[in-house]
Length: 631
Image 1 (cartoon, one colour):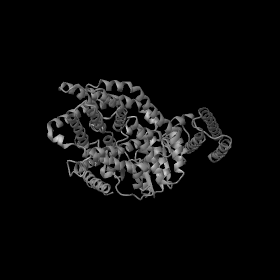
Image 2 (cartoon, helix red, strand yellow):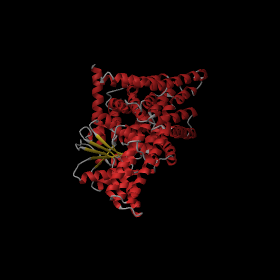
Image 3 (spheres, one colour):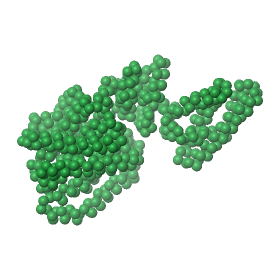
């Protein structure tokens, strides 16, 4: 017990001291964890000596992180990413391996050593890449999606790379034959486990979680969440695949479930702590004895492999749909070696493909490259692309203190600005969030108090005062993020009345199906105002043009309400649309006839038209023009 308490005390104290200090210096949290590991490791205060054992345990933080990443990717989104994953991911892995292999052989290294080194160094750190993206709110950018795609391909490549290492063993022909003979059995076992995870996730996981949730015991649901991740990781490890890949797959399968947010909330604290422990273990594992024995060689290897890998990544970034301001972050976050390199070099050393001295050198190179990555990212933010580091540049705009406004507005674009200005001019205060750093900077220059942040983050919503607010205005441009925010608010802040902006009719329907009733399509009123202007230019009296536009608006809303329950039934939608268009045409024709007769003036005309409208509405749901559903 004393041993366990001592270890806990040392780890927590090191993290609590190093991480805030690192952030105060502008270096980020990752460099703080790495520095803490160096300080307490064998070549620091020597409070721990078995860094490898701690690293194996701490890898579970990476597993949890990939599970949570999977929860953010619905299967259809993952399928849409198949080309960047297998396309650009393969280009990075094979391109980096081939280039480093060629340079190694040209430098006089044995080809087996050069190949093992190239394979291990071509793999990037999933933990550092995704953690840095989350820390800087860059996960949804083109660079962030590119980093995720390459990282997923590297996790999938774990088996073939590890299978190749024993085949390179010098004088081990019997081992090579045995490995070749069992290849199909291993492949079948891997495919069966993956198929079991997919089928189990579809057929068993949701009913099991539903049954556990009915027990109304939060701690058991948390335990079930951890059990799910551990079991999936154990299955993948049993067949030799990446544990993180298995956890990611399980997360994707649950991305569309009703328990997605609950799983994220339960696992987020564990992920953060264990991921920090992983970085501490990496810092502890740097063998400074090897570094000090051959500093010139280590420095040359680190510089050479980083430059070669960056060259491949920069070439990819120029071809990929990555905007030029985002290219440096894409390159830096994939240039370093990764945790999988430790496994490759350890396996190669055990199989006597490389010497133990060469293995120690390569492990030190990987660890130092991981240590340098946060520093390179900070340098790129400050020197290469001052506009890139959104989190750093907008740090003064980040919400640090809890807000108490009764109104919360998510999105300060063209739509959110009008709402905000109307509320402020009317004497009401609102807390405004926007995820676009340029937009926040611009709004601040014009005197608007807008905070930088992603409104779909639960912790940020709590800080913004969502728990006590009365109204949430969803004015986000992206439809998926808009729906995600609505789901999150309805689950965790049921007292909020949500007023939402719909980008088109389909978006309106999705919001309406979620129970929202305060929904406005962003283009409807602007189009109707233009229509009124056209009618007036054609000679229609202004008051009549206004009434016609209002009547059309009412019919348009009723049209969507009538069609919403039948989304997916194209034949029914077409029937309702045609009937609604005919009714509207007949109604307006009656109004024109009444106006032409001039009976009773406009007041009588409006009254008779309203009666006609009520008569027709009572027979069939009023609908709108079919073009309204495609906007």
